[in-house]
Image (cartoon, rainbow, N blue to C red; front, side, top):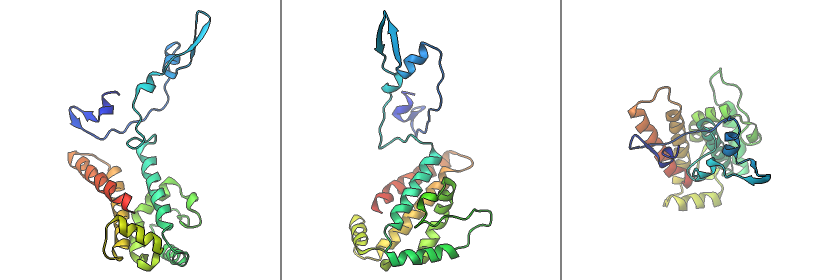
Length: 209
């Protein structure tokens, strides 16, 4: 595990995705793993856990698996996107949302404005597939609050205000492409390279929105 922290697999750079579920061990090994107090010569002392020696970088690591992490990212982006809309445009967006045709096998998706917290993870993953199409029908310069427009325009260093809706739609397109690459049925060398490219492009565009 210490070697995996270095991001190396057979001397090659790699994305490391791992998780720790339930660890079982007999005493005293179990106490050593968890750092539980141990009695020695009638004196109680606390042992440092060997898991404490692992690095924890909150900007590079997540405590969740890829399914939760991807859905969580989409949920945060949905919240931030809807907060860009003016009150009048929220109603226009919901109207397009209601009339948008989705596959019959899908369950009905909650209202993203009024019932954001009702989204399940599966709902969020489906949302990522259709959001670029919804925004393409709806989003224009007047849809976004002026203050938010100015901030995004400054972040992307754009001369024209019309670039703001385009970058928001592009952001969702990148998120959808990354999601597709993450949940690929089979992985080859080419698919890993594609995933790497998608992640890098997504990493570049997300902070702009």
